[in-house]
Image 1 (cartoon, rainbow, N blue to C red):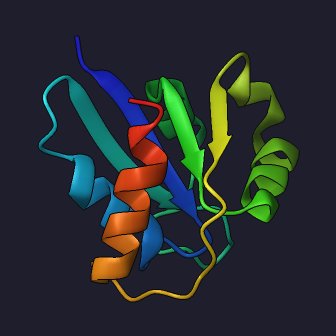
Image 2 (cartoon, rainbow, N blue to C red):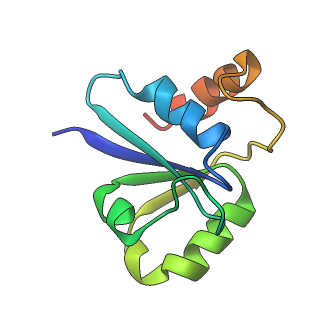
Length: 107
């Protein structure tokens, strides 16, 4: 069974889709991404949280919003804050390097 990883940022346009794409082909992993803001391209849902074994958020504010909006759906989920600011474009080589370094520690 794969380990299901959900990547969360604000609008699901740059950071979390990059992370989803970057780790999608790793053996033993299944990835998805979503946004926590009301205008996210693919918003976080209770179903996505139920699917996820581990949730990576890009910023502390995302963890706070996630806990506030979905506390009942988080249960004992591991939620890890990566501390990656919204300073990158989709698949920016620097963002890719940062994600590999920060997420790699937990895989």
